Length: 481
Image 1 (cartoon, rainbow, N blue to C red):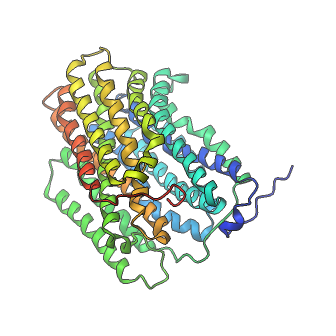
Image 2: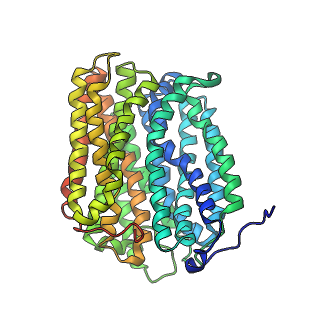
Image 3: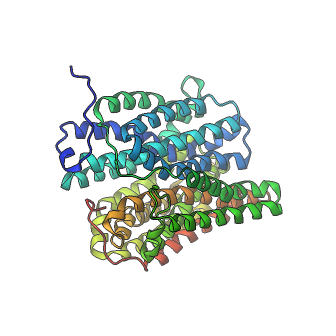
């Protein structure tokens, strides 16, 4: 058997003939599956983690936000680094690091140790994801490229659903007495298999013309993101001291400073982080805000939802996961039609998606009035299904619609910023909704806290619907996206 590594690929046209490209794609998607599942699998295990590790409310928020924050801080720089050093090399390093971080998370004895492991997990996932996307663009051409990204999108949707269910199954099964730790240990065999498969099948590829890495900019971006999210997460427990507001303002100023710095040195041979020229395109800027608001709403909603149904309604992790799967069922109903509808109706599809998502959250909020401790979750199901339908119409075609207004040569940079915005929006959503939820919980029941907080998540989706009306009234094809 020939075990030699595939030759390095540099030209997409030539790379289209790489004979093992679909096997390589499968190996890479298996690795990134760990990241996609981890986004949702942890939510269902949060109440059990809180009980087992004695985690505070703020620490629970950090378990979710630390992952997304690290992902957002590292993603763009990791993409640039892969362009220069080799995408396969970075991808393999990301797999190994993610596996080790999952092991560390699984053996954590304190909430602080778990949060630290989640930071490393998020950074490792950020190293993997841009390498997969760039390698797909190198290995595939024409219709095959659209098919490859279509399969990736389907895997993303399936992974989100699987994470909700798998988190409940593994936590409830309590295999070997590990309890919630199995949601992290499950990554280990996947990481080993993906590492072996990717090492054997994935071709090395890089972009020789890429600029040098902006180390200073990457550090400033990381510091800015931490400065924005840290006071949002810790402010409530600390009594909102003056320095927390100053730190938040400093984070916003740091982001603006980074943007101004990059705008002034476009002529230098430095790989840009924020692609400031894209912000001159109104549709791109609006689309980025829509992505932030969407991530804010969905991550905030599922944080408080899983905490309420388990800690407040005393659902088992499995029952909570099965209830949340109704959301995924709703998304699957419209997922195949989302992009074709957007190509025909453009922004109106996104606006409808935002309205449906907000209406679904409102439906869950109304259904919460009819759910008692330990009773049937069926009053929640219609709202979850409608919210899932809104998800498909909003987020699946969002990038396709925005890219219709972005120069084709800037599509890669635009997609990277969208991924960063999604992670940052999710981290902020967890921080803000968690603060509201736990603050209200101090004086009221879990059910009252949920019903009080859910409208804030719905409001974020209504913002998405309104802003979507200013986006282009068309969409690019999947292959172009």
